[in-house]
Amino acid sequence: MSRIFLAGASGVIGQRLIPLLVEAGHVVGGMTRSASKADHLAELGAEPIVVDVFDRDALIKAVVDFKPDVILNELTDLPDDVTKIGDHSELNARIRTEGNQNIIDAARAAGSPKILAQTVAWQLPDGPDARAVASLEQAVLAEGGVVLSYGQFYGPGTYNEQAPADPRVQIDRAAQRTVELLDAPSGVVVITD
Image 1 (cartoon, one colour):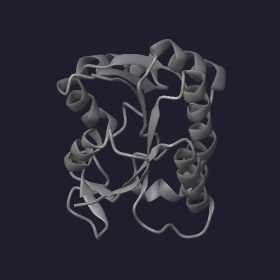
Image 2 (cartoon, helix red, strand yellow):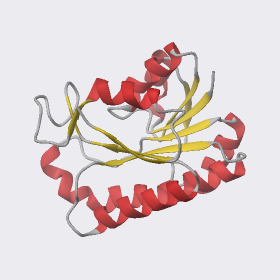
Image 3 (cartoon, one colour):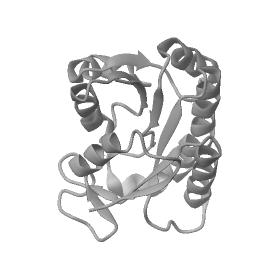
Image 4 (cartoon, helix red, strand yellow):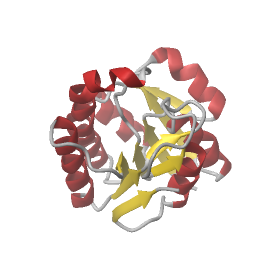
């Protein structure tokens, strides 16, 4: 049994991970920046932790207080409407750079639990997103962590109800594989169908 600090707990994969992690015997601290989502996280089986990844001091305190064995970073900043995704590239890049660095700083303050962090399994066009993904991957690997390189999610609640082009991964399969990888050695793991 591990104590798992799940950043991005209310996201599309986070909500699927919580019941799987709890069922596997883990204690899950479900981080969300939205107090309105705390009750839902508790219903799923997590201990809700309301903190904004960009509030570095509050995040460090939350992680240290939780005493995790593992930090699972599933944070993204994406719109509900897929057609607005381009408008969010700077926000998503910031969560992968500044947000991820704050998580790493919090991990160090909490005794350096293992970090697993989400990126994408496809080549992004050069720009803020691509640079942010490269930065996140380098930072996580430098900490001895695991990069979870997911294909495009599809299935209920994702942008793609039907299977999109490769690389892709059905959302429940992605969550199951993530739970299986908690003990994976440091490196990049591609998670696709």
